[in-house]
Length: 393
Picture 1 (cartoon, rainbow, N blue to C red):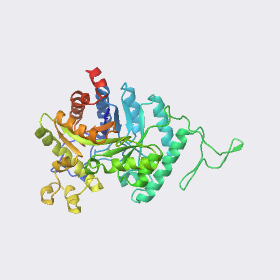
Picture 2 (cartoon, helix red, strand yellow):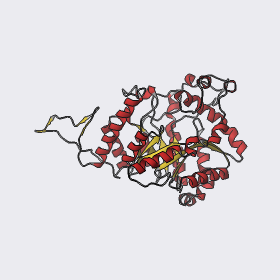
Picture 3 (cartoon, rainbow, N blue to C red):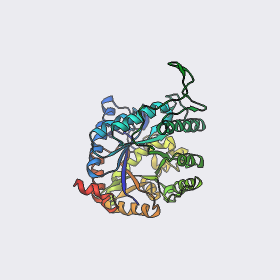
Picture 4 (cartoon, helix red, strand yellow):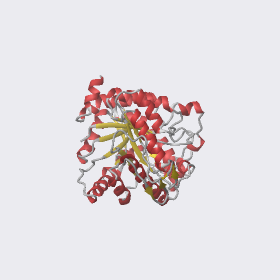
């Protein structure tokens, strides 16, 4: 039963020339004052979401993106600030890319943010996908097996440090603590100082490949999953697989329990208006993510086409209506969105969270307007989600 509405902001700046005819991704470069503007943008969204009853505002950790798409390098620092200018909104780490951190430094930083925000920071971990980011910080990503191996050991350490009064760890990549003399004794254990206020720590992770190994690991650590939309979601692939992983661990979870579905979309007064406004935003998304393998179904020739200005139709690049049909993108009226989400709710009765987000390059004023419309015209149709929105009017 859907009761919580969230949104994800990966950190894009407002930019012109969005769409297939606009500036190619690799040619985009912005001055520092534009890139730094994402923090004011995040604050405007978080404060509006706080007023109208959203559950959580998620931000993504990314680095070195002079192209202007994902410009928040430290989610925990941003979360601390946003918690100070809001009253009840949770601030989600969507996600801290664990291979780019020392696990104990990440554990300390999260625990500090958790305490200073009085438990309003939500933890999240991810393996990463930008080679420019992960490899620059000295961790593997091109070698996916090495990346997963490192990530899993790091997460083991994170939860040991959160949940144990004292701990030690010996693995392939880390020996913690090192066995060194310290003030007259041999060091054998460590204590994380401080530890988080809420234990066990609520933790989320993106569900991408939905492999049995990855899902079993998540269930073993009670990690909740953020699932993208699309055909696999609508057919229940990763959602059923997550439930099956829970069953293998002896846990009887409802279909959709401990999961959140993400939907990119645009709400308009008519469906036609919404589609028209969504098209350039969708096209900019494809320009950014197709070369990284995150737009399913594209051929190599189509991926090459999106890197250039124009020529998409000749290459047969799918239009947004194609992905709307698969369920990963939405365009329509508030009533259309209610029907869409009711379908998800009916299919996945255990699911409480929906993450409805504006696509890359959506301007600040439009994003704020979209959140307001969802709060006033969509959230009241879902049990429990209308309480804060009604109080905010």
